[in-house]
Length: 342
Picture 1 (cartoon, rainbow, N blue to C red):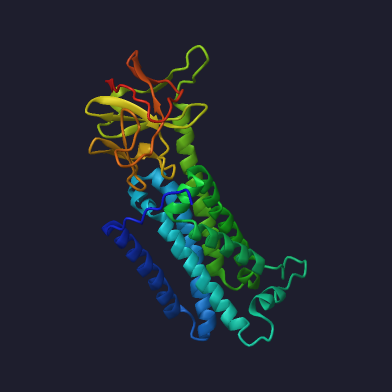
Picture 2: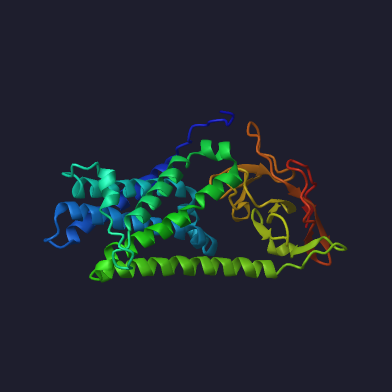
């Protein structure tokens, strides 16, 4: 394989993150078992506990992104979200194993054949086949979990890898359909119906609010034209030391303008590692530091410090009438641009 493989650098933050995830998931399953009706047998209890845990965890995975854009305090949850996704897949596999182990344990027909053959599929809304939706969601989660390691990110490239992992929204839609045409068809579980509707409403609301904030930032920009390609980005005093403002040209990638030691530099807002939002990070030890996984780049040329080889596109800046203006035409990655004193 042509991609370079690098072992995962485990640190105390990762251990704490994973420990909190695991304890939270196991704690939920334990509490579900304690709160369930005494008439519910152990097999059904396991199916419901693992299934509901999977749905809630998948909801949280999709909520972290827009929540972090609305409030920076959620950023620590974003750093290792892939770990969250892998654990969600494990919960989904436990749910599937409980289903196969109970309903088809004594069937002479192979379990997977019996699973699909048992789905009603009458053509009416009630009795509509719901099992394929669950299988589809599980397959998507399994693919995403299998390709979550940085090896696949390097091998596929950030854009293709990110596009592939956007399929998590499809998995969520399939999970909603699986529940809606399955357990909710009984009409007796009002609590589950509330959880499904509430989680869907939460995700839609968070994404709309985050999109509204992004649109407001875009609208604040002065448009570029062929005669005057420079964009009015921000007042110099609006860019805090060690931080950035993000400019979104009408065409092309968003740009992060950082201040370090009283001077300004502009680079692509997309981290070369996983397209993370560099503008939400800060300058650490003289380097732009991505808030997602800590990848670093020099401000003047967008190059990662040795021995790393990643490079970002850089941009020219100028001062005009008390504003910092940006030339939205990117320089080749790694091009040195003298920082602007402002």
